[in-house]
Image (cartoon, rainbow, N blue to C red; front, top):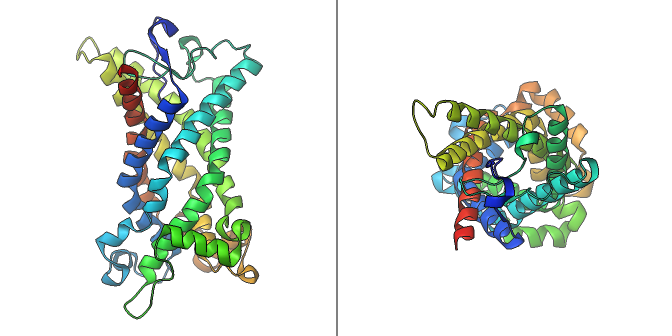
Length: 337
């Protein structure tokens, strides 16, 4: 979803349907999962390994399953990628229109989410495009709402993913794996520990991570994309570039930057979440978010809260650089069909 605009406003645009949002978001989400999952597996293993362990040898050792094990647990996020991305885009669009109708008298609501002919999708009209304090608050709030809503879907999915990723690293020839796959893992957790105390383990810290994360994500994306588009347009006289190339280049770069920047801000919550979602599920052994955070700092130091950040940032840029251009490209293809 990009903030590209055209001079004629809505005259050259067509509305995005819910079905188009679902298809485009699903394809974009699936592409990002395939690219990013191996990096995510390395991140989770680094987060959950003891400080005394050798990160370089432990992550890809033979006992961890080698390179193929980096794709363990991908079934869960891949199978729900369409739903997650549809919820994110639909929630952000709906909350933005609600904000505009409530605080701006519906001034921009008619164009929000419309496809344009030059390779983008309208998020803000030209007159409201400058990222001032008011527009930042609007984008941050609407992004946070989208993050809060999708957290209820992503929490159980990531719980299953984390358990399968750590299980693949811990399994040896002498130990049998506890879960056979994502479905077996989810059903086993619900059967033995219940839905909310079991499958939704870590929901609190997931909300702490997702709510501000998507606020910063969309706000940073809008601001960065605007700056990149302006820079590319200013160089048109020297190196002419088609307008759709402007939109996709700006979208890819802004998506990568916003994704990496957001992860850098909220990363400690992700470390705590991984610890909670890979710890024993027995009720008497469960600990709260702040208790787990204090335990991590006391045992391993503050630096452990940023363990795996490097590989996360390496993963975040290409994953988020893919999502927005693929989403826009699919929307345009659907609109041409």
